[in-house]
Amino acid sequence: MSCPGNGAGAERRWNSSMETRVVDAPDRGRFEVLLGDRVVGLASYHVEGGTMALPHTEVDPAVGGRGIGSALVAGVLVAARERGLHVLPYCSFVRHYIQQHPEYLDLVSEDDRPHFGLETADR
Image (cartoon, rainbow, N blue to C red; front, side):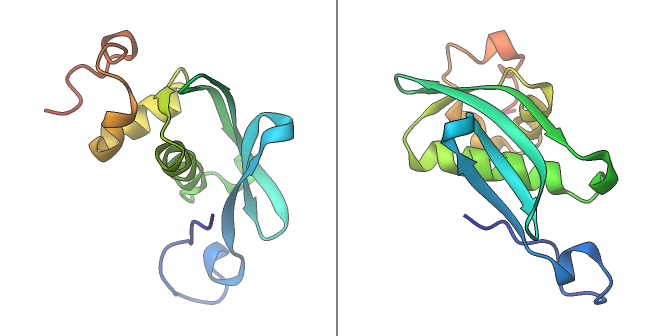
């Protein structure tokens, strides 16, 4: 799955010369975000039944502030939707992303939303 960077811009911009991709690495229990061929972030996960628990995400601080963490979380949530899974957003970054992008709120079951502070995220 690819999550392209923003805009065309100048050739020296981080996203115009290197592609950002989000890939599943199930043998490692994580999704990885790659900038070119380099892993620059990850989101650990565990699937049980129809639920994907998301306990942790991290992005290399050297590439921080460029939207790579958001691209990673978006890729993970799209994959969860494609697989028909609900998510448990234990990671605060994932919870914040869902609050800012309510189109993903349905991935958290209604019963679980209060536990994650998402009961009013759709308002």
